[in-house]
Every structure is written in C-alpha cells, then in structure tokens.
Image 1 (tube, rainbow, N blue to C red):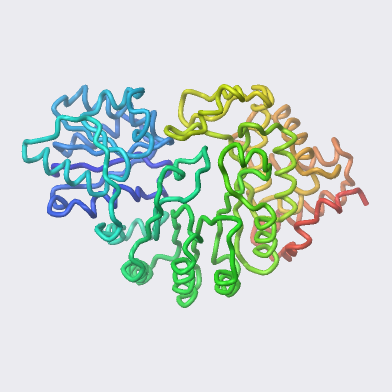
Image 2: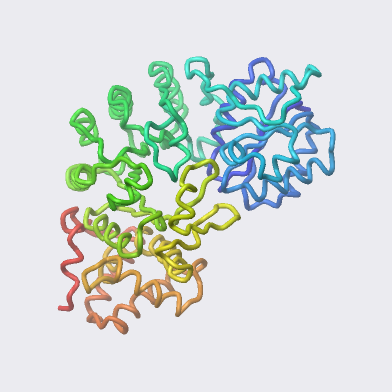
Length: 493
C-alpha cells in the first residue's frame, strides 16, 4: 500500500491532473511510496473517500481548484471524520489565498501555498520521518524550473489514447490584469528548451497528437515560442493539433512566418481579448493595444489556418451592457471561429475586489464565484447575460449553426440580435441545458421565420447546409472575409 496518495477531482474525465504529475515527478526517493488517484466532479465525494481509504495511506495530498472546491471540502471532511490520524495536505490556487476564511483549510493538517512542486516532497519526507512542521500554512518558495523534474513520462498509455495532454514551456505572466490569478505569478520563467523539446519528442513517439500548452503568455518570449512552433512544424503529421494561449496584441513577423505554414486546423490560439473598452482596461490594470489586436485577429483569420478561440468577459467594473455589446460586435466582425463569453469571477487573491465598493460588485459566495450584479448591470439583466453566454455556446460556438447563426441579427448588431433570440429561447424552453440538437434546430428556424420574418426558403437552405456540415457532408466553407461580414447580408431576399 502506498504511504502517499496524490489526488484531485478533475472537471471532466478527459482532463489530466497536470499538477499531480509534477508533484509525483519531483518526489524523488519517495516516488516509490506514492500513487496518483484521479477522480472527476461527477463522482460522489463519499465514493472518492472510499477509494482513497482502501489504499490505507498515511498522507493524502489534494489539489483544490475553483471547479472542485465544494466536492473537495466534502472529501476532506469525511477523510478526517473517518481517519483523524490521516495527514491531509492541500495545495492549488483555491487554497493559496484567503486561508483564514476557508473551512477546508481548518480541517486539513497542512496547506502549501504557491507552486508546491518541491515543497510537497519536503513536507512528505518530514512527516514520514516523524518530524512534521508545526505550521499549517506553508508558503512554497518559487521553484527554479531547472531544478524541476518534468512530468511527461507519467502520462500513461490510457492518458495518451483518451485524455487531454497538458504541457508547459513557461510559468508566470508579466501583466497585472486584476481579475486573473496569473497576474500574481511574477516573474515569467521558462523551461530549459532543449530538455523540454526532448520530452515533447518522446510524447510524439508514444503517439500523442494533441498538445495543450497551459502557458499564460506563450508568445511573450519570441525565441522560445518560435523554436516550439518550428519543432511542431517540422514534425507535422495527420491529426497533430497544438493549442496555445497567446497575448492578442503581440504577433511579430518572427512568429507569423512559421504560423502561416501550418495546415488548417493544426493550431488553435486562445486569445484573451476580455474587453475592448479602453476605460475598463485602465481600471483593471490591463495593458492592451486594441488596434494591434484587431490587426492580428484579421491576419490570423484571413492568412492562416489557425482556429481562433477568443474570450470576452461580462461584468467587469465600469462596463455596462452597451459597452459589452460594442465589444462583442467588434469581435464578431473579426471572425474568430469561437467567442467564449464568460461572466467575471472573483478568484481568491485577485485584486479585482478593490472595485467592490465603487462599482457595487456583488459575487456569488459559492464556487465559481461569478458576478451577480454590478452598479451598471442589475441582477435580472445579469441573468439574461448568463443565458446569452450559454446559448451562444450552444448555437454560435457549436459548429452546428455556422450559416444560421448570422441570420439572427438581421438588424445589424450581432449582440442585440442574439440577445433578443436568447430571451425568446428561454421563454420557450425555460432551459439552458439538455436541449436536444434537433429541437434546437427547430427552435432556431421557428424564431427566424416567425419572429423576425425571414423567408422560409432562405432559412431552410441555411439549415440544410448546417445539417449537412454536421453530418460530415462536404459543404464549402464560408471564406474568412465573408464570415466577418455576413452581418451585412442578413436582409430578406
């Protein structure tokens, strides 16, 4: 039986616990006494406890995140209730801040705040030798990347076949956006490039075809990002897909040259636009050149095969519905394949709370701590925007309504058109989940023909092409420039 269990509850089965693998890789001689057990949030906490206790560990290390905070509290409470002598060690962003306010921390024996890659091994060694530290909260010194053992050998064959493979070439972020925990991770540190690329080659050799980089600022260090792009470009093969998070206003020619050489669909860029409102960006300490953002997104859409996933945030301090609408419309006009609309979250430790009084920010006290209302957006409007975000994901982002979605804003503004549709859809269904695709298609057609009086023939033609596309029937893609300007052609024939 292992002395140490490393565990967490992932958001979905397909996600791998990257942090646990880093902890395991850096346990040194204790690695032989440890085991990783992964669960997901759809499993009952009591069943998780049963599996853990069957291994009869002495130490349980638990990764606590915003998506599993509620379930983790139940797991820790039951573990300590059933086995009071069990040493429970917590880590992760959810327990690294506001430690004096959390019941889960009160129940645990120790909490390692910050990057625990090396500190966890040291704490386990002290505990198993019988001389654990007296302090509960243990701040981890920032580890040097050169000292870290990389975790990629710990991905199993099943992980490679069935799950998302996470990798990182850097940690930290040089920016200070007040809503983001990454703004607290300064300085930016890079993995040793030769060692990292050798690990990527071994993953490729084992059959990995999809790589998700978790770097917050992949395109910050041009030398590193160029080398990584060239590495994957030289190893192009069917099914290879690489995901990066990028700074939206930084895309010099040194990066453009390799990017344009990738085949369509091989690269995905997650672009955190968040807001185009310059007054709001100043308010939340965000640096962003909006003209450069637009130029870069146009170039990606028109000149490359990159799949662009762009993020916008609802409920930022100082931004009203009209301000968000203007930003949404501006982004739609740039034609990214996906626009992720997310409600502002009050992550523990982030300085966004300094605006609470001035802008009357009210957040849910329960994870994921989403905004409920602000001085400029009341609760009922925020609820409508919450549904807008969900329905946009079902319709605008799903790939099932490529040609019917732009028909929804015949009056010009994509936001206003889709907002009206969102209100109507909720009135018809009273649901935001579990809407069958066929029913959703029928509702979209009904709205277009009955509510905004589009010609039946035009709507049915768009619906059929979308249905064919979903079924894998060859349908010509909408050209990038046409996709950006479809809003101009929505008047009835």
